[in-house]
Structures are given as structure tokens and as C-alpha cells.
Length: 240
View 1 (cartoon, rainbow, N blue to C red):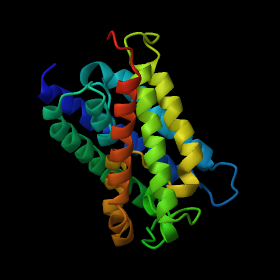
View 2 (tube, one colour):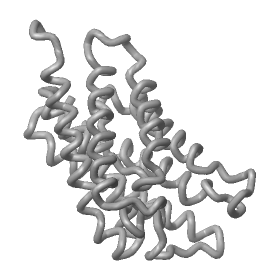
View 3 (cartoon, helix red, strand yellow):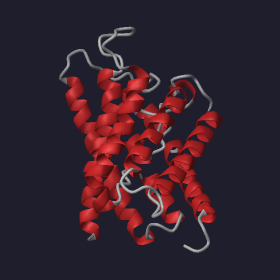
View 4 (cartoon, rainbow, N blue to C red):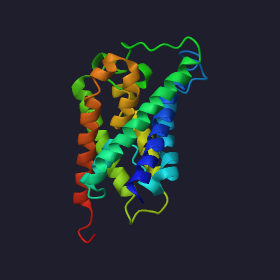
């Protein structure tokens, strides 16, 4: 498949992930106010992120591989599954898709009446953060470790589920459920990134506090993705 077509597929795939996942957090997590049974809560948000990856992978995975995440692309390269020359084009497509999703989400949210972004609030506009910007007030060290380890495991699952010896056709389900689990663990810690594009797409609209902490949500997921890819490459059978 031509690189241009693969990058075009990564754009809507990442857009869908951010619009679906972050959209559920902004529009539906506390719908009607705290304690309202109509709100989906953070469990619903976790499930929404998993569903976006699952459906997006089935829609676009056969075209681009369904990365939708710079950390996934880097990890697949580190694991010997992706060419280095394609990393930058994929990164650009993913980040652009996430930013467009953030813009669309902002326009929808403003149409509800009474919507406003508090740039000092933890998780403002579904942004990621640590310290006072962490939903649970977790430290920078805890946030970095959480993002590093969970992204590494995410790559291990991605590479294992898409291996030639794995059950055919089930990879998107395993990957989507893994992302759901990751969110269930880490929403209280960082509001869950494990994806630099996802973090960037909403941080640009959430104010200077979110932008100022964005570096961690590039560094930790990229490092974790590379770690997971290298570890899986070492684990795989020598006769491959």
C-alpha cells in the first residue's frame, strides 16, 4: 500500500480515537451533573477509548496497520515491524488527526450551552496531567512511571495480538480491551494518555497548563512504546 494512502488512513483513525474517547469524557462522563445516572463515568470513558481502537482497527487496520498513536508506531519500529522512514509521516498524520478531532469536539461542546474550559482544572477538556492537573493529585514521578509501564504493556499486547501465529481476526478486540483496561488503571493518575497524539489534540485547546505538561505525555509513552517493542523482539522465537 502506498505511504500516502496509509497516512490518509491514519488521519481519520486517530481522529476517531480522539473524538470518541475524549468526546465521551467531555460530553458524557458527567452528563447532567455529578451523580446523575445518565453520566457514563470514567468506566464508560475507558470503554469508549477501547471501542474507538477496536472499530478503527477493523476499519483502517488493513490499510495502514491501525496505529493511531506515535508510541505504537515507534514501538513497532523498535520491534522490527515498521520501517524508520515511515515514522515521521505517520506521526504527522496522527497528530493532525488528533488536533482536528480536538477542534471538532470543542465546537460540539460549545453548542450545548454553558460550556467553558477551566484551564486550571485537572483533566480540563480531557487533557492529561500530573500534580495539580492529575485527577487524583499524583506526582510527576508516579505519572511518568504509569505512562511508561502501561504503554510498554500496550505494545507487548499489540505485537503479540498481531503476530502471524496469533488467532486471525481477533487482534482489534484484544487491543481494544487492553486500552480499556489501561484507562481503568490510569484515569485517576494522568487521565490516561499512552498516546502523544491524543494528548496533543486536546491540550492545544485546554490552556497553557495542559500544554506546559505535554512534554511528559510525549516522552513517557514514546519511551514505553520503544521498550515494549524491544522486549517483544527479544522474546519472539529465534526461527522467525
